[in-house]
Length: 137
Image 1 (cartoon, rainbow, N blue to C red):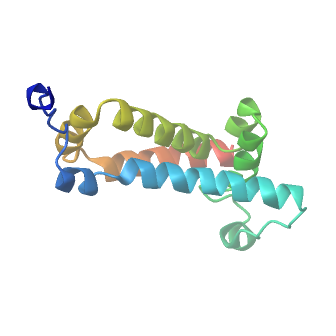
Image 2 (tube, rainbow, N blue to C red):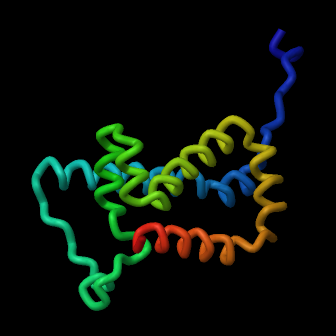
């Protein structure tokens, strides 16, 4: 009976799986940042002062990020988004990437190859600029 059982080939080779574990690492870092933000709030640890804001009087692109992560840890999504939309969008994007990567590993690997040629740096700069305009306004 054991001879009749067919082996199902893996969706990804071991080499492909090792090369494409970024969603797990990134989501793990986001979860760790949320946990650290929550613990710092619980223990009433002081915020680090933003050097950019101290020097210019203007908020930096990530100003409000720690408070946004603290709000996320309490489940207060609207407050978190109000504090720093880019941080919240990044946290949810990491979750979406992880879910897609786990649910559709072969498709995720092919998609990664296709989108690696997109102008991500320019898109990131545009998002950061829009976020900064929101924070300054």
